Each structure stands twice: as structure tokens, then as C-alpha cells.
Image (tube, rainbow, N blue to C red; front, top):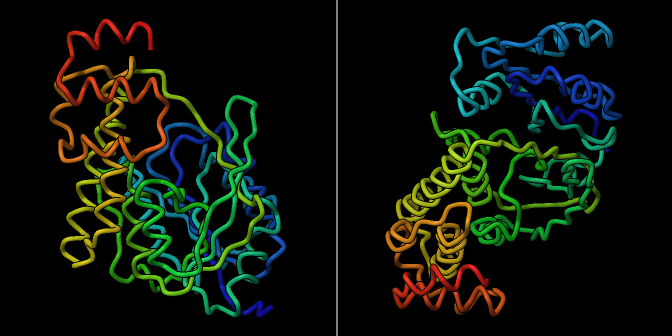
Length: 316
């Protein structure tokens, strides 16, 4: 393996004092030698920066091996990610969220799978940790950008950046959209796959994604609204790039209905929102792998039988 291939590990930080020590330990203990570290703190109000600086001293990380950018006001995760990219000098970049952690050989294995930097993107499997439960997530990667893009549209392939080693020059024309901080990964990941030619993968769980739950229903509704906006943005992008073929249209319909169907759940129940959100996707449930009970619910909603559905919901 060519150890001259330089990797920039990018860590956006915001109020991660409770978790960041494990994250920093995992990136400073990588078995691959040619790494730089880019940290962008988004105006944390806790002790995140103190923990980070102590870890830098503990591991004796030299000044030419890391950069620390500190925002003087909270500008959101999208701006932090853009700052990470603009300050990176590596051949590849790897995003690591400050409350997650990675296996010690993650960078080494991903670089090795790049085939001496011929791959544009190298992905891996990951672990999802939720309240003590650990789930292994095997990702169905393809060896080219287009097929991965298709699978990412409706989350057959997870549309996140932190499991990907990405060639830096793919970001020459791609940036995160400011003030869109929940589905920024979704939009950028799809664009990266669209520009990539060669995609490689390592089927080993190298990233540990820690799932944290927000309790406020308003926060969850904001997330749902952001996903609606994300699909609209990526559909507009497909139109502009002239890549809205039949396969892309079909996958978009699947994604749209998966979002739309939330308005028939107890958490987000809103019949008006169900009718008005992506009405073009209202029939696609017939081609999807839902249970018979769910299909009864969707059929009644499709026929506008909302008063009866309100009764039937109690038994579904």
C-alpha cells in the first residue's frame, strides 16, 4: 500500500463534551500514518474544546498535522462541513462526527481498497448503536457512481458521508447548503456518487454511529420537513443536470412516498399534509413491500376515506 496517499479526517464539533474523547482517541490511534486532522468548532458552549486540546497534547500531535477552526457564532453543521473541506489538503477526506468513533484500522483498510487512489469513493459497513443495542449494517455498494446514486435516493444505500473515504477533488464543485442541517448528507452524498466513476468498498464494520434521540415533537417534525426539502432540492438538481431518467424518477417516487406516509402515523398524523405532500407519489405504495395492514391504510387514504380511516387507525 502507498503510504504517501494523504487522508484528511474532518471533525465538525458542537457541544460534544460527553462523547468527543472517545472520538478523538479513535482517530489519533489510526494504524495508517499519513493523516491530517481538521477540527471545526461551531461555537460550542460546553467543554468540547478543552477536551480536544487536552487530547492533542496527550498524543503530542504536531502543529503541522492538525488545524483547529473556531467559529465565533453558531453557523450550523453545513457551514462547519464546508470549512472542513476548504481547509483539508489530503488526497482523500473522511468525515467523523464528534459523538461517533471509528475502528483503529479504518483509514488503513479504506486506503488499501482505493487501489492506489484509483477509486473516487471507498465505502464501508458500520455499526448503529442505540441505547445499548448494537446493529451491524451491511451496505449494498456497487462498483460505479451511478448505481450507488440510484440506491442512495431512497436509502437502499445509506445516504451519509461518515462511512465514505472521498477523493478531495470531487468537492471542487460540491458544497453543503447553509441552513439545511438535517439532510445535508443526503444531498451531498447523492451529488458525490453522481460525479464518481469508480467506487470500492470494504465489507467490515469500521464506523460506529451513535444514535441520539431528540424528545421534542417539534424537533422531529422539523426533521420530517427537512427531508421533504431535501428531496425537492435533489430532484431540482437532477433536472438541472439532465439525469432525471425513468430509474431516477421511480426511486424518487419511492423516497417521496416513504416521507409522505409519515403523515398517516400516530406521531405525525395529518390528513391534509398527507394529501398535499408529494401527491404524485400517492399510488406508488402498490409497488412497495408494505404489510397488508399498511396497504389497507394507504388504499383508504388514496380514496379519501379519511373519516373512516380515523376509526380504522385504532385497529391498525
